[in-house]
Length: 351
Image (cartoon, rainbow, N blue to C red; front, side, top):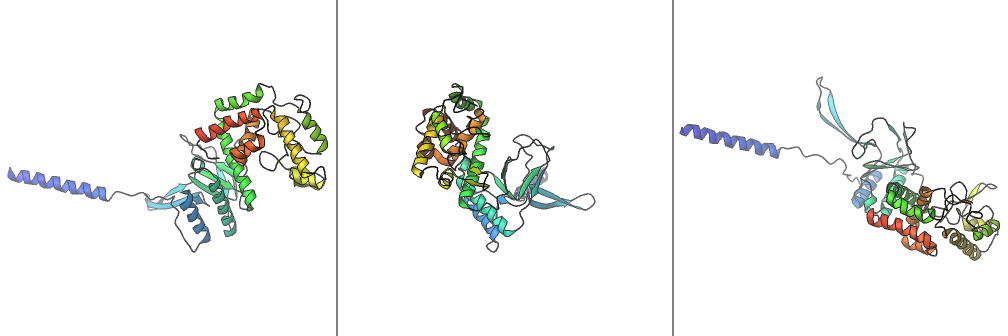
């Protein structure tokens, strides 16, 4: 009996040791999203700096890791791939859509794209920063119904930035980044029916959507300014979003409001600035900041179009700048406050 007890104790000890060995030898998963530094490689060093500052890994290839994990029945190597797969949703995976990248090739293009990504991340509040970024020359898909905006596409874990290597001027990087951030916010806000309805009701109650400024809405200042400033509408008043530049069909160039006024000697700068404020006050009585995308003679077609203009202006100007420009129009500020509170409080986005 004594020998049996000793044998049982020995077996327990051996088993315990085996379990401890198994725990000690458990596999530690490698974090393939960590960016390592290489001071001798300008591109890799820049990727590392961005990762250290923002904790967002940036890639130039959608396959970020290939690791051999064994062999198959025939002795061929079995590999595990980690990819930036845009087909993943929060709780789904799409197999019907395939994405095609045109990769960046030169060091110069990669460094330019990295500089754009860095400036973009600097402008983004922490809550809007993506898990990872893919930089490409171009992105297309096999789906004819999928809408890929200019310069970016948002996946579940990856933001793709493309066709941005040639955007190097600081003001152009800023405006493009603001447009991307604004578009992403528009998508989020548009899904909240309560906010959209509250915002739209302000101008909808006045039956002001898709109306002619000078006839249906009796905007006399707009009528006077339209005569005075040739080819200029309420859509061209400023250079920041949501406004657009004035295209001159004679010399085929684009001009800001002030550049156009100066070119054709339409007014002094002081007079022109006062007049465009009258433009805004006139349409601001109905809660608008610009007009229909296909023609500035009309107010926005619907709530969704109107909301886009407000969000883009909020991102471009911030609270102080927006209030300074539009603060004299109570209905405009009512719509602003609905969006601003939702963006900064509910979505936790810093503006």
